[in-house]
Length: 406
Image (cartoon, rainbow, N blue to C red):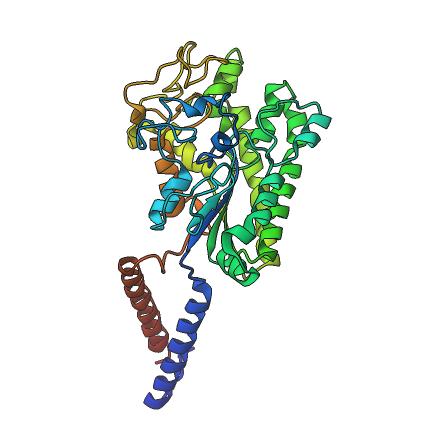
């Protein structure tokens, strides 16, 4: 059936109506927000010095000593890596200063960000894990403790309640990674896979509750990471090195059953985040797919400049993976490799700056953020490019619509 032949005036009216409608629709859907700060919770993956700040000066953790921090900072900062972490690359990309740790930093400036992530932290309370026979007292700063610290510190961070709400509303809130240690501690005390799986919905519920509470306080944009492919972790490859050869992925050399466990956590977390997004449509809840952002490196390490089969620690000693439990990086008996940029694993548990950089780029620029970030507000250059792209897209579609009316 042929389209009716509209008179020129009618075509003009339709064109104006459609252009107004589409521009309005795109503007409302963009949810463009220029972040003024980063608020962070989590564990060692995001810890920029909190564990160090909480430690007894006479019993400092191993991350307080070289070669930690050697690549970028040229001295230890309390970060569990040779250099920057994902949160550092997020801050740099947003044009913000590196996010200072909250604990032990009374004189730090928290105007552009504050970090509560603590190395060894769990999502679930320590007492809850101990009731289940999971005794691994590395730290008792759970996600709930971090959230309480944040709420108690608000009068110092932002003053008046209205100012605090504005600060939280305009912040990028990084929720983790958190939960990995809940599973680590269970596996390290020989809990079975089935027993450890029982923690997954509890961990996710805890993360979800924290997000909900922060939304009530004004939170508008959340970046919520999933876990890593732990079957590729040096500590697990060492712990389970006598496993059946059929339990290893022939392409990567990683433990398939452990990667399956990590993938399951991510899938369940995404389901919960989707539920929250429907409940709070005015909020942006972005899933950071750390799992696949890292797995791609293990699948094709040469493509990213790493050594073939990058399943050895840069800073370690002994065994097939240059790692021995009890001999930690940062102690006199352990040395680091000559070129950390060729390694994915830093100390057997954590990653190198080079690996963290690639994960951060995959989150910021795609495709490992779901939904992807909209950087329309970030800078004038990006803004101009984005405007041009949107203009061309709209005009092209408007042209098609009017043409079809002929």
